[in-house]
Image 1: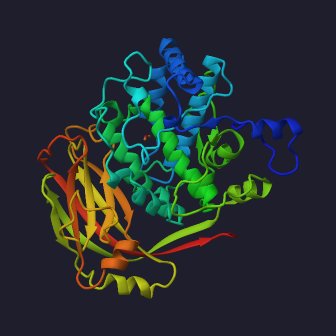
Image 2 (image 1 turned 180 degrees about the vertical axis):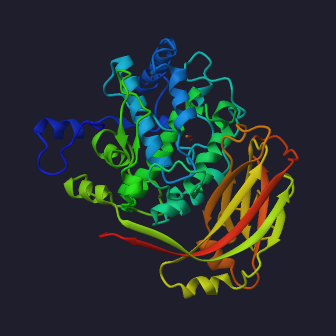
Image 3 (image 1 turned 90 degrees about the vertical axis):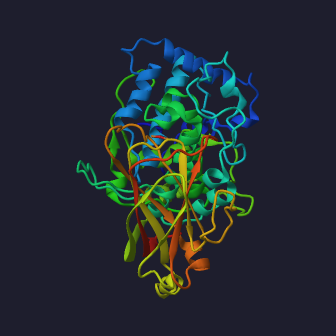
Length: 453
Ligand code: C2O
């Protein structure tokens, strides 16, 4: 079994308990010197994977192809899929280096918005030449800053955090939407680093694995430290991934439910608490916690009303402000929904090719721009694109959702307008884009999380 431990209650042997207590620790790369064994082991593992023949599924390129062929984005599967992907990758690193205590370092782009120096050392396997970011560029606050991250983590509904549900084994063309964790910091960093990182072959850049360590760490904080339950929907929990390979290169099978416990059984993070503004008491790492995590909760998010701005063209360089028909006094309408009342903005973009730009979203802040602080009451969030070049030649549609609860509360009196501000992520001037169209909806919903908390 992935995670190596089936014991959930009393059946753990002493040895298992010890192994869990000693599980590898994923550390912030900023705290590690270039000669730290974690850094040198990571580089050695990459070199070893690069040296494997292409017939070995643990080969560096083959690992990236797993992502290209199978990765799950734009739904609530993004978190467990990438957690499993990282864990199997880590296992391969341990096998190839003989360092069983190895765990991937992570890049905390909130505290350190520049790409860590070690990734620029041309003599290291951590170097990758295909990037648009430079050693001096910084990921902007509207993608990864503390206010943005704290707002996302304060969401209590799993669907609203992680993305739209998908049915079990859904093979339809139905396209669900990405939640804010994906839309904003996840996509933002892919796009900011650029080059291979902006594509589905992003795991070719060693940064990828440390970027996803950070995304995974945020899920750990949300789920375990802040004690928010995941969904108990079997469509989520029973989904199985069969595309990974274990440390020997043999096909592996892992369920979403198994990934939920990996951070308690198979690895952990160095620091516990994310936000200095919300002190958190980490719960005991005990059997009760494991049971609670496995159970999850009945989580629903029901749309109560929707106000739509008809499809509009944007040129990718100029801000646009659009009236939302019927959206008057949205704050009042939201409060009529009672305690579970919430609001979000859904944006469906259709575009040909969009690299390295983000779109800032404001409610009733027509002067909002890229210098506007993320604390601005009307700031809803930012959307970044990922994998934007993969369907060159025809339009691609992607849907994103951002929580608008704070912006509606603060600014949702009187008529409603949404302002979209395109912003460059590469430091280069924005280029005009053709055929970028967006359909915006502002939704009121009721959120329920039925958990024994
Ligand atoms: Cu599947 Cu961050 O990518």
